[in-house]
Length: 100
Image 1: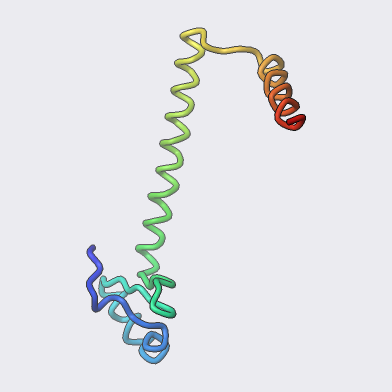
Image 2: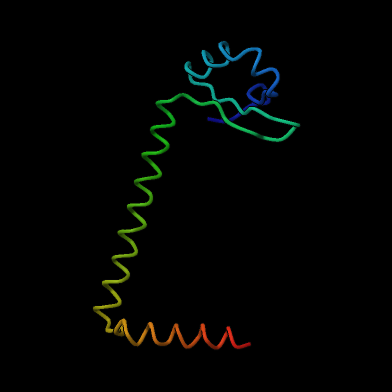
């Protein structure tokens, strides 16, 4: 849903009209509340917020699955090394940076 100029509300106006704004949001609108002329907070329906959170969780899960698939591809291609040698390399790099 696109935000129109009428959906951008100064905080002082939002305080005075919160009940009306809440009804508009419940009917499907989204409101951006500004403070000192800058975007401050958004007023959205609670169910839509839950949906946005669900989408974010699903996105995180897809990223984790993608990372795991790339890791398995590295293992299959033999592009791995043991953890001790990897940690040793990292410690040497940190020590070199600290001594600069």
